[in-house]
Length: 112
Image (cartoon, rainbow, N blue to C red):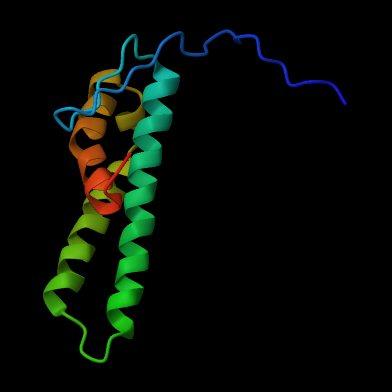
């Protein structure tokens, strides 16, 4: 079995640094690949999270309608952004998505 190829491929990020001090994600030398994958992963995780949390809430004997509404609002907001291809063709827009929603993912999981 051959060892995995470890050389950098054309288009691979040269340097990525994430500063977690103030909650904002800052990338050095961001390129389209890094921004696209990062923003997409964040949005997809929030979509999955809202679905999991909605199912947990609905299984309760007395579901909280406010919690369900909060989850629905977040789902619709993130899903709308995720479905718009133009959001993933603009570096500034992707950085805005990361800056806005990465802290929410960190809040949910208490790390990252």
